[in-house]
Image 1 (cartoon, one colour):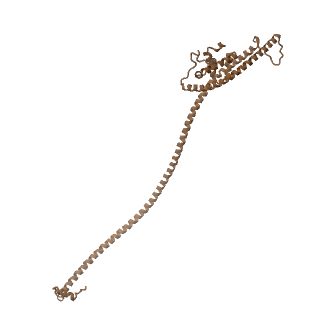
Image 2: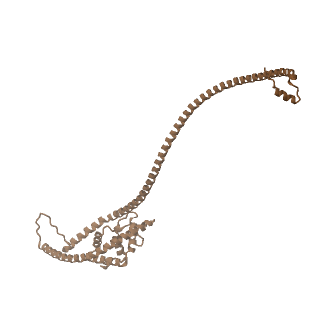
Image 3: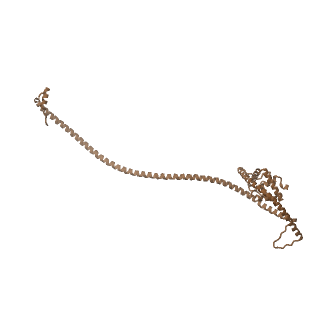
Length: 359
């Protein structure tokens, strides 16, 4: 340990300040230096002890930090291992989620396709429903047409029942005409391939028959000319009546369709037997009442001048044919598709007081 001495200038300054000179104080300084060295040693020792304690503390802290470091390394390794495991698990979970998302996406595509198919099926269903409604309307129309055809068929069947009687009347009238051409109402037959020898009376009868045939032929020619003229007039009137009858028939059918309760037959004031039809033939159920209602409707629709014209023409035809039955048959041949004319003529004969009495 070295002790530095103060210089003279410094001693002088100290002397000027009423201090003792350095010579007097050297012993004290030596003592003081010895005591200060001991204090310095003690201070150094204290410092060394303090540093030693600090070093021990640092060593302990270092050891503790080393342990912590090792523990942290272990924790880090475990954490890294856990991280790797979590990464693997996350990859698996991500793969599973991706698979689920893919499945859900595929399902959504399928559902979308099904929705489009359902929309197309809905449009198809609407179209089918529209077709069904159209078919239902067509069915109703066809049902109405079928009902009309059935009624026409029943009417035709009822009219067909008159054909044998009409044919029998025609045959009877032809037979009467043939008989009326010969005098004494005798009919001659000539077998084919045989020679017939006639007496004088028979020859005279043949001559008379030939003369009668000539006169009848001339009369028939005149009647034919008159009938042709009348037929021309009647054909035009009949065409008009056909159009009016067609319109009246349509309106009568509309009125019949509107009427829910059909009439059972002829009114009791027209005929005695309600169930018997024209000519004593029984009508099918419902057809006679329909014809009666249609006739009444048609009769009211016709105007009075046309009815009078038709009656006048009909009377002319009856007078030319000489037989009322033959006139009815001729008119039936003229208008076979309109049975209302027969009913009209019958009712006219009924209501006008029997035109046969006028002939």
